[in-house]
Image (tube, rainbow, N blue to C red; front, side):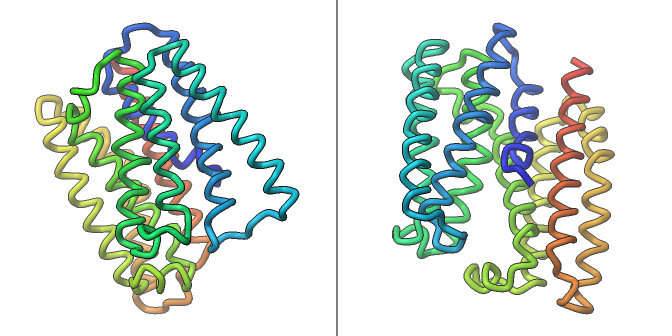
Length: 262
């Protein structure tokens, strides 16, 4: 599953909760994040993560050149279309990726820290990046809509853990068993639901619309968890891909409905 599709709900949610100053910024922010920053991040992971198949030396050279070119474009476009501050935020987003992707760095050696940094940057910080670009806000808005930003990180973390539940090595490195992965994911989803309730307390209709769209992935999660509970061989790649795609599509459609109802 393309990483951009996996992370698309964060962009859509941030857009749906932000008062857009200029419509043209929507396309530009989307292009910067999903056509430049996220693909660059994928390239960085492929270079530095020892747990994935690494490209050959010649491929690394080409990939580094391409990523350098894309970084220059991303930062230049961010500066020209928005501001130096927005370009700096994009740079921070990119700078954080090697910290949790590089197997040789200290933070990666502590699985929990690497995982928390990943979901923070791809959830909370990515939401803030979209909010900053679309709404013309300043650095002080970092804690605005904190419930929405934190819920993005929690849901992302839940789905990410479930997507790895077929990989025995990944589970062991994170010191989680198959059942514990489901329990931690359920905890993340539960806390996210509380945050959604707080966020939409003055607009209960949005909260219940969200529950409607969350029902399919939650139902499949329970179904899969019951199968794995009785037989760990059911922790397969097929189920992991299904829950990942179902979650991303359901949340994406939910946030599109929010946009259409504005």
